[in-house]
Amino acid sequence: MPKKSRDRAPHAKLIEIQLKSGIIHNAMFDSDVEVLIAAGCSSDVVAHCKAVSNRALSIARGINVVVDHDLVRRGGLFHDIGRSKTHGIGHAVAGVAIARNLGFPNELVNIIERHIGAGITAREAVRLGLPEKDYLPRTMEEKIVSYADNLVSGTREMQFYEALDRFKEILGPDHEGIELFIKQHHEIQGWIT
Image (cartoon, rainbow, N blue to C red; front, side, top):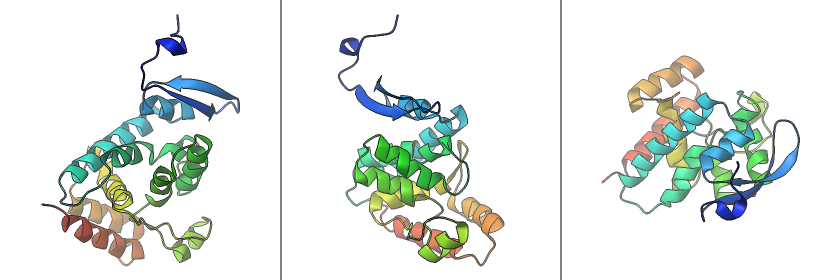
């Protein structure tokens, strides 16, 4: 028998969510992972999001600047929520729509929107068919989640140089995203104690 809402843990969240069926309903979620599942993310996407969240938290704990660890954790967990709708580059835009529908705070929505690659310039966004705007991570939390995502393939963690080689294979050695990733790496390395 399902638990009644009063029997739920005190941290449970009441969220209005639109499921793949198109039906909107109120649901209680005990964990953020349950939100990903209810949004329609596959088990592979959920596993990847958990791995990115863990890697991002590990980075956040090892730096000498103050960041919001819970925002980093949740940003890592929800960064690919848009993959419940598409696995293309537009998953970040789809994720923003889902996150706004779920009432996520702007700081979390921004992580979802700006995690792709090491950021995407407005010019590159247009070339890729995204709405014309800058998708470059700005806050430390956004940069940490974007960087952690690039260091995790599926659930497998990589070191920076392996991830860089992978970026070069996918994008080509002269793509602007390569320089953005290198710059992101050096910036984050500068925060490490």
